[in-house]
Amino acid sequence: MKRGHIVLLSVAAIVAGLIIAALLVPLDVFRGPLEAAASHALGREVRIGGPLHLAVYPRLGISLKDVAVANAAGDREKEMVTVGKIVVVARLAPLLSGHLDVTKIVLKQPVIHLEVGSNGIGNWQAARGAGAVRLEPNPSAPVRLGFGSVRIEDGTVAYFDARSGKSRTLSHVELTLDSTDVAGARRLDLDGTATYNSVPLRLHARLGDLQGFIGGRPATARVKLDCDLFSADFAGSLDPSGSLAGNLTLNAVSLRRLAAWAGQALPPGNGFGAVGIVGKISSRGDAYALSNATILLDGMKLTGDLSLDTGRAIPAIKGTLAVDHIDVRPYLAPGTSADVAAAAAQVHRDTPLALGGLKGLDADLSLTIGRIMLPDFRIDGAVLSATLHNGVLQARLSRIAAYGGTGTGTLTVDASGPIPNFRSVLSMNGINVQAFLGEVAGITQIGGAGAVQLDLASHGQSEADIVKALGGKGAISVGRGTIYGVDLAAVARVLQSTVTAQILADAVGGNARTEFSSMHSTFTIENGLLRTTDLSMVSPAVLLTGTGVVNLVNHQIDFHLVPTARQGIPGLSLVDIGIPFHVGGTWENPTYAPDPSNLATGIVHRLEGGAARLPSEILKAPGAALKSLFGGH
Image (cartoon, rainbow, N blue to C red; front, side, top):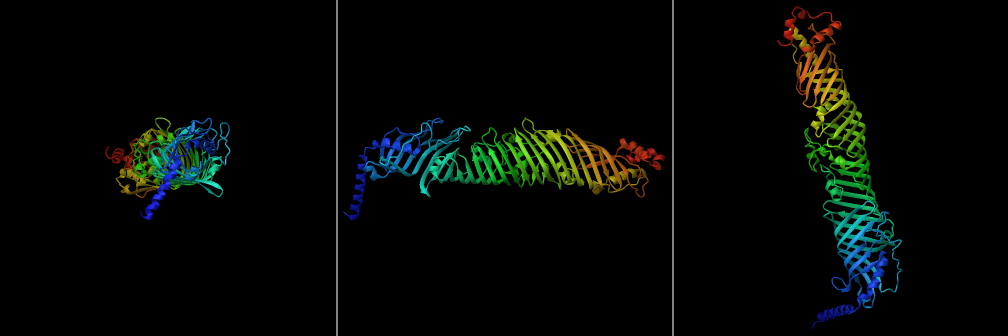
């Protein structure tokens, strides 16, 4: 026989002999010492209910069945840990001499109950008070628990917090826990996988001082979690009560999906997609605080401090943030799209606004915002404080920059009932009137810088409904400016010149315009109808005063204007007579015509104002003049 074969057979014989010898060891003698040693190490009574067997494969040691670790007195669960089978890996030589020197423990299908009591103390901390196990170590004891590794296979870990009544469960737990002595402290490293809410997690964690942590002291910690939903990296301090403080980096494919997975589902709607967070985090119970944070969400960048309390029936958020921009439109649109650009495009006049999300969150925020996009309204910058309680949003804008001007305002959105109610108060100065009216109402014919005051209220499910129910009051004042598409002074002159058959061209059209030095009007709004009785416009050639109605729903206008000449017009003899005229149609394409209902009033007013005489043409042939003036009707 070859030498190599002899060596292999000899080794096999030795191993077989050792195994046979180990099988002859009366293992039941270790039951009591094992229970005592484990009870002392854990501070909880440990019971081994099943038989002890020698485990040869895959590890050499002792197999224990029906093992239970008692919970602290008063905790919800009777047992802190129950295990169907434990393999205690031991050194062989001491085992042959009647001693059990444990090097590793494998827990198969354990159920571990971690609880935080109403006093904030976790059941994994060293036992205190009644029921605590106090066994002094015995150097001559037949069992030495010198193991540095614990393996959990297909375990379940349940967590319960008596302060909030909330519980969480990890299933399919596959973990390796290795402890080593580093700089006088016992360090614990965890690596493995687990499943929470049907999502498999990959976990790596390190606890700097295991013994101190079990004893109730905070310990340095590093935790990395990774799954298909998110990745998170925490480095800081972990308290046995569950509180933590440190640096957090979090990236998630969808904040909405992450919140639902964590048990804090957001109301249905658009947006709240990809999110990234970097900042300092602290927590106590169900309250979390972020400081010096940078948050990237739906293309927005938020910086500042934020806190979230998830322990309430309605989660509450507080904070002070600077935001580069907010596009509100996608969050108002119906649907459930993560693409905020696509969602914003869905907002039309008849689109039911999605305001149900206001009922799912309470908030108290101070915001500095670079740009705000609303339906038919844009703000270039704002400083505001906002509160949201029971579906009622109240925002106080202490500074607004919009359309080249500045101002202040308030906004209230009450979504607590079946039909939302709205109230807004706005005061702006120095705005670009053409840009403001063009975006708010689609009126682009008036240019200039001016001031606007609005106090409006409405209700409705869509923008169209809100406009129909709109009510309130306001005022607009414009300094030097231009009305495009019409020369109102020329219109007045044309109407006057019909008496003498002198027609002035280009009064209305693309190149026509009215230059004015000031324009002012106050108005009231009721059911979408804007009414004014004091419209006044001053231009170098004419003073226009009038009354009118604007239908904000269908863009119809009905104005009656009375011109008064401010300077002579060469070649015309009727310049001192104000011929009233009517402006109708839509504000996108208005029509102009003489106003017979106010003609007599206009002439009388001119005579009362000091006109020396009526035009000779009217005095000689009033019927012909009127026929000419009104086109034969």
